[in-house]
Length: 111
Length: 195
Image (cartoon, rainbow over all chains, first blue to last red; front, side, top):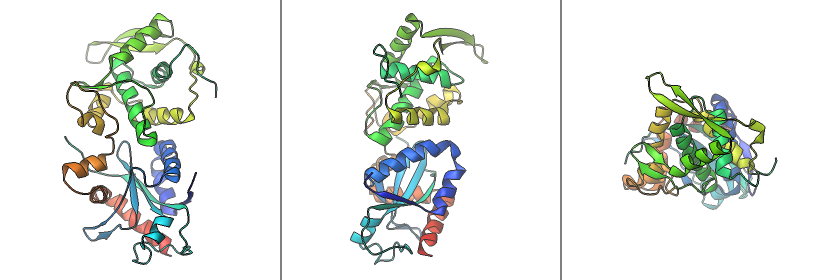
């Protein structure tokens, strides 16, 4: 694995809500630590909710895993802009993934 | 983990595993579960676990190869086809293993994770529910009737963004905001990090 994981308490609690998804989440966490930008998308500010500086990756059937890339945050100035501000941040771009949340979405894609 | 029998393909081992774990079980459900195994695997590893070619048909993803393999496994005495009457009064063929579960040996540890996830999500679902779900999956929707299903189009966020002519980031944000519980969780986790 290229990146090291950090799991927030919220992430751990979210996982506990879906015990049958645990193996799948572990597999996708492992993939994210190897290649975090692959199949993940940066989030934006919308409808008064500021999700900038965070990434999301889809997981079947209708789950999203939300995380921050430490090196991306520093190098792209997300911390300076206030999008993220981890209390333990050293200001150095570390190879670390901070896992924030896991949950379902409610969007149906139709042809 | 044991290496797979020289005489058995990965698809054969997957089918036997699914026949053990899926309840209720049917030929139709096994076909759709193999499709979901490939879909789940593709999401993680950017390739199908099997090399089955699925096609877009009226009843969801369809692959005659799976029926051929089940027939072969029956001929070899590994499976037998049990005919039962459904609650609607129809007769259904249930492929049933005649071998021990421990004889299934996939060398790929990741394959077992994905198989477990598919069974966890769909193992006890009614066959029609599995059919209905497969018909909502992005690779199926992105393929014309009769054509081979291409798994590379499996990210619903990207496909949603294309359809609505927005960026994937915009699409991903709409997905994240679609569930208040998830949005709140992200914002609370962010607040937790700032403390």
